[in-house]
Image (cartoon, rainbow, N blue to C red):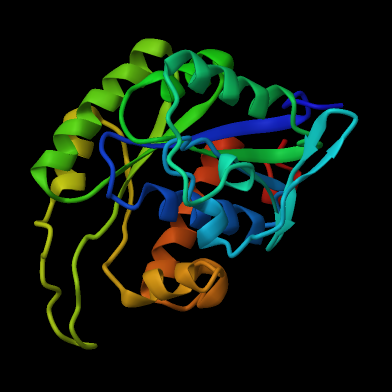
Length: 262
């Protein structure tokens, strides 16, 4: 049966602006949840910049059975992305109604099957895609991604207000690009500033789930098609992202063991 009727929980990963590492967080969150024993799907809903196929090294197209798309599987995830269906060299020029219709089809006309959690990578901002997901899945919970710098924090504030107004609970904030340590034992350099995630957490009352350091392995792992949580679980960034996944799993089902989350 197509659609999300057998999906236990939906977690949307959102940001106020582009370039903060939202897709990196979404993919590694999904992998972290799968590592806990959960059945996890990943929907790349960033219709203007669908980069999940590149970051997961997927070149296969999804099968279509009786008019229903079957997700591509890799690293224990069931994955769907517009990037599977369009030429990566061509721009996606869609107006609002087309975006909303495409997202509804990805939710309703994909054979997601039985999943404990579907992670949805939203496009940045507070436009049609975010509103469509929020209205289509009122029970969807949100993880916000920011960087420490004030301009990113300001945009995330706006996005938090949107989701609260639509009734979608925000589980927490992930601060990405939180500092660069040139060598082990050296003090981190705050290339993008410091403390933005903590400030936002205090202002909104939303917990700061973790601060992900700048690490070249985050990029090289994604470029190689095996993101950092799977490629190098002991990496400092991996440990933070795995901790975020554990916290999210407990928030979804605090009284249940991870493998029974549904």
